Length: 113
Image (cartoon, rainbow, N blue to C red; front, side, top):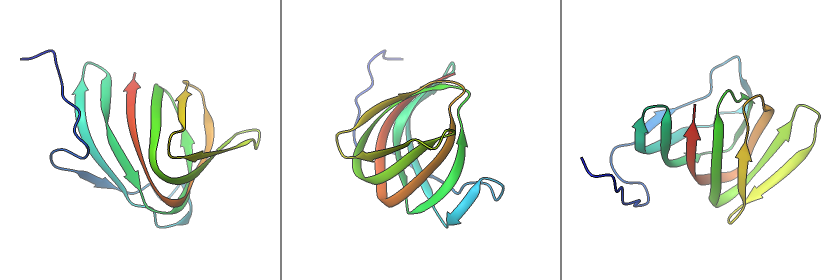
């Protein structure tokens, strides 16, 4: 197996999900994920969500870069961070709050457990 992975936007088959009912706050967001890497506690790919709002709780590290759209990430203290194309962020284990997609959002991500 090669140790090189070429990243191509939205390659391969997609997984489609929605937030669980207990996490959903508003809307009917649909998540589409194109996984590029999934092994040994490391995940990378492209994620897209349609508008809606849900609760988040991170037990892992995630780095992401917003490619399209507009979302608002709000921490447990109520501090809002607006995310638009070109914004990058690291979420550390223990982060909790809400994620609200105002305009369909696309991000590339790397998650490490």
